[in-house]
Image (cartoon, rainbow, N blue to C red):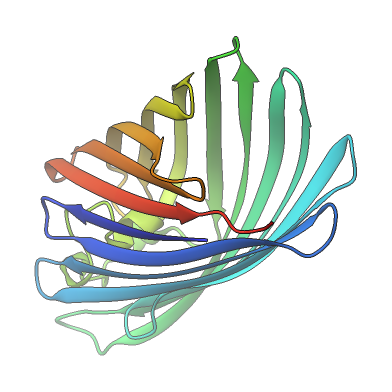
Length: 253
């Protein structure tokens, strides 16, 4: 189980609670709840996330399935389903991922009356982790989405109503594709990782380059803490820095 908090230089902030629970020898249930607020150009936007997932390991492969709700019902929200097939071994792991997102978007316009548009997105991607030695590992992942509507051709979208420079903003959940890669180095029970990534937003086609450094350390036999600092460089909004803090509690006997 754990708690987390995020904040950035664009006045975005979020809090989260999450947990993984064993419900069998090779089966796990995961739950996540999150609340975020960003300061848009016209107003503040609040979003929530509720997520449930199941993971079963058949050996040598496993499957993950899950569903979630994300967004703000007054502006933009989505109901999502996902599934993954993964394999793992001594040299690392690889996962093939699929996600189905179903959106409702309240279009805002100065000239037209507001209306709600429904659309969907199908995402396919992968993630992999390779062990490079006793202390070093490499991870790589990506996702690409195909939307049922071309949102760049919607002239009545008042983008300023929901766009913010924060990485937590709604527009950063509407992405064409994303990719990330990084290295993790372990020393004792502690670890440090460096990750670089990029994603493209679907509304205006702008790209965001992201770089982050994380540090994980135990504070007791059952509690770990993680600190992360990130820099996002957006073509549309410039640079934003963010800081994340997580506490993990490990139960069991």
